Length: 341
Image (cartoon, rainbow, N blue to C red; front, side):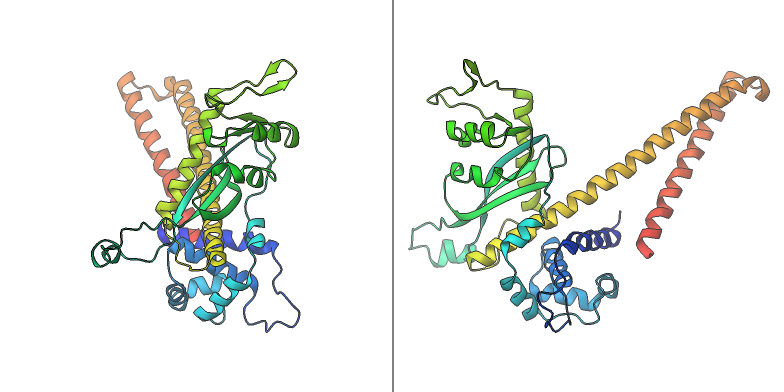
């Protein structure tokens, strides 16, 4: 998929996502821009790693993007800033992937919020030896199968991981919960067992007492299930590499919303990748089926072809290559149709 087709698919997927929200906050709204259009632009801004002025400039030059959002006029950057301040974080949290899963993994990470340049912090201001430790800390729960983000909790760091365990995991419906030793406590394990009706796979510290599933039956620890926890580290790595590890907003509320828009952009990209993998797998399976049927037909009709074994091998290779080129051509036609439609 080329860049142009990828951006178009992203905008279409974002448009489907925000359909859950009301189009206008009030019947007395000016109706120039609706909530869906402004929400998509803010999500797309995180995808492109742009500023408010940069994303406005992009939509002014891209008529195709304006047509996808039904934009007759591109909103000013101040309109987007005011909408970002007005929208509530709970609304953005509701747009995350909410679905029952088999294995849920939880972990936390930090995002930089400093504006000081490297020169200011190391050279010009070198007499001040104090370290800037303030950052934005986020705890997330993901589906280890699809790697979609299910829930989140954002606060100002540094803070202990353990305090956000229940807030992140209480809305998730799953069969197993995996976490590292930072979440090791009897309270967390009993919360998963009794409240969530799930099974925790959290390694014990040396000083932690054992937890029992029932009277006399200790909790079992499955290493194969626990090793699914590493996928949440991959999710954090993808978010920081694709969308950046620095938060540009200044106040805590706007920083929180900016990070939530980043999570929504990640979920949309992940959904597109899974859809492409399904399409490619379908094409490969269809090609393999046609290849097997073609080879069976050649072997059954060998006496009609009246050719030697070497000639038959050459015919097989040629026909298989022709079939492969045919499927590549069909896939190219499909991508071309999606690009220009």
